[in-house]
Length: 216
Image (tube, rainbow, N blue to C red; front, side, top):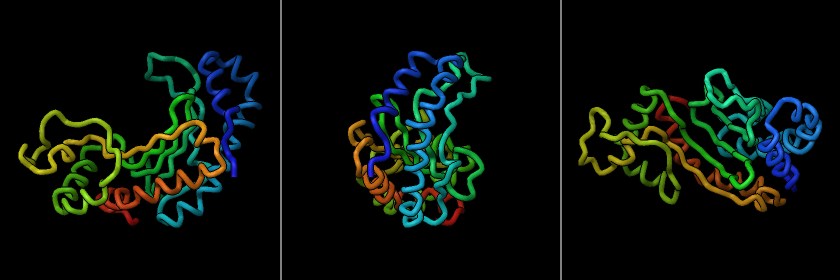
């Protein structure tokens, strides 16, 4: 089933060149047709796949990020995002820093992500405790994954520099990602590709979720 098309990427390219209210309002129906509606169809198709991975993560209309930027505290006053994205969060999540699966579509940058982005110190401490308590489980869950994000410059409190997993314990973000091409995103099997990645990172997500005391 083909969900996304090059029309989505063409629209976002033009939006980047015309990031102003007058242009967007004149193109709003096009945005709905080639960006928002296809993403909603993707979410609908992905929902049963996600339930098979974990019944505690949600895929519904709230998963889709609004196109409007929050410019209140930004020097960049461009009103619109130049990418389309969705996050499939835990049912108990109250903010974007809870564990989640993520899909990002942008001209020249398509990727899937999973994990905890910028968790609060208390949440990060719980993950580090889980890593230290069962290091073999952590290494198994992250084997073959591309982990990224920011790191502390020094070991976190309570851990020595000689800890065998010190580089992972120094992480400020606990996230994994995988890139795709625009051609793959526009392919008939992209829901399958994204679902397969979510299945691959499921042990990693389970570890993070349970570390925070949430059901997986």
